[in-house]
Amino acid sequence: MQTIYDLTLKQMEEMLGTLGQKPYRAKQLYTWLYRKRAQSFDEMSDLPAALIAQLKERYVISPLKLVTKQVAKDLTAKYLFELTDGMTIETVLMHFNFGESVCVSSQVGCNMACTFCASGLLKKQRDLTAGEMTGQIMYIQRELDQEEKRVDNVVIMGTGEPFDNFDNVMDFCAVINSDHGLAIGARHLTISTCGIVPKIREFASRHLQYNLAISLHAPTDELRRKLMPVDRAYPLDELMQALREYSEGNHRRLTFEYILLKGVNDTDAHAVKLADLIRGMNAYVNLIPYNEVDENGYRKTDAKGALHFYDVLMKHGVKATLRTTHGDDIDAACGQLRAKHERSRTA
Image (cartoon, rainbow, N blue to C red; front, side, top):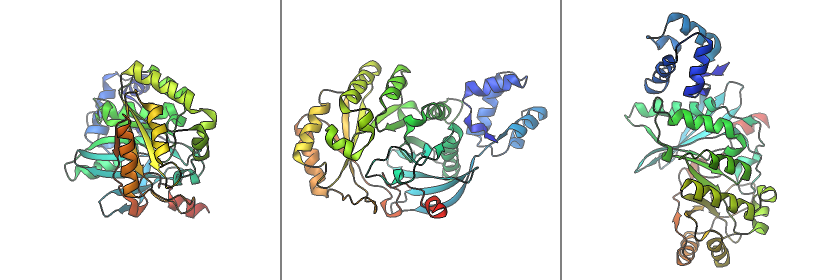
């Protein structure tokens, strides 16, 4: 049965129209779902009993249930959720000075096969619906309600390639961004893509205010193809042209994500080539310490080497940041999500 979290406000109005209801009922439903955090249709006391019955026949509210929750030393929390078909996904809650941030998965498994990433060890089983992504946020938000906190930021950087599930991801963003829903600001939503050029252009054409982050990880096609097979389909020249068009057409700053791999992409020459690649763009580089995965053999650049790489970029006119690792002791850090429970159960 479909989750009602799947529906954007416009889709909700259209659905209710087919049931003979007035459009204003959609805002009432959104209030119950996202402001009052209703977990059953029976709680929705200002809706007609006949409509409640129709909704119960067609929809469920939450599409997932918690299997396990792990909490790291830094209080980062990793949730393993089971979907209605028995498949599992992972979601991560991180605590920052600026608020609570949730990293959402967009697919069960991933087909991008980046050689350094644990998430790609399980091939894509299916896309997540907008409601299954929204359900991840809602479960965590209900927990945060007990501490009088709210989800302030959402990053679609968990398992899966968001632009390989474009329509559902766009609907998900519309749901949680809606003023009648969770009202998470557009500039507090970040979508990360490994570089699917046609979808970058489609995203650009919509002129949305969501943040766009690009998983780059190499400054040349030769190296990037070894690390990220997507480069064979969309090489750097094509990718960078699409990104320049996006940035200029939307007046938005880009983030380039760059995982530092010891002896692979972390030399001075790599830093200079990276600076040459993006200099002049409205962008910065987010340097990410590698979180080691047993299966692939890569090792992290040490702190001294990471700081040196940062310095070279800055000296060559490219702004950069060094990301702090969160939750690596529970495999919740960047590139470590793999739904281990699912892997062990299906092995």
